[in-house]
Image (cartoon, rainbow, N blue to C red):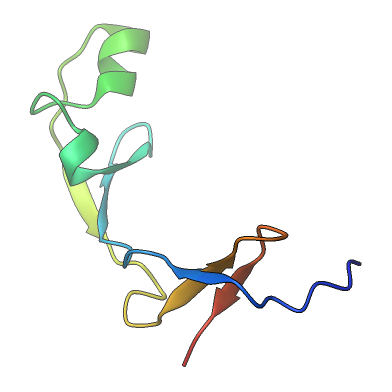
Amino acid sequence: MTSCSHSTLTLLPQQKNRLRCRHCHLTIKQEDLAQDFCPECYEMQGEKRNDFEEVECPDANEARYRCESCGAIIKGE
């Protein structure tokens, strides 16, 4: 374990809810979904499936910071 004092912190953006394909279980951000169908199902099976469920981020209301010195992720309160 390192002896970093975590003196230089950067606030990370809040995590947003994601979409999970009900068939292949790929989890993807809404903004990363270029088309209206699952890219994994299309690539692997050639089928344009658009059956998604929304998955909530467990820490959506919690601030997170990254130490610029060692890269550790630190949860705030």
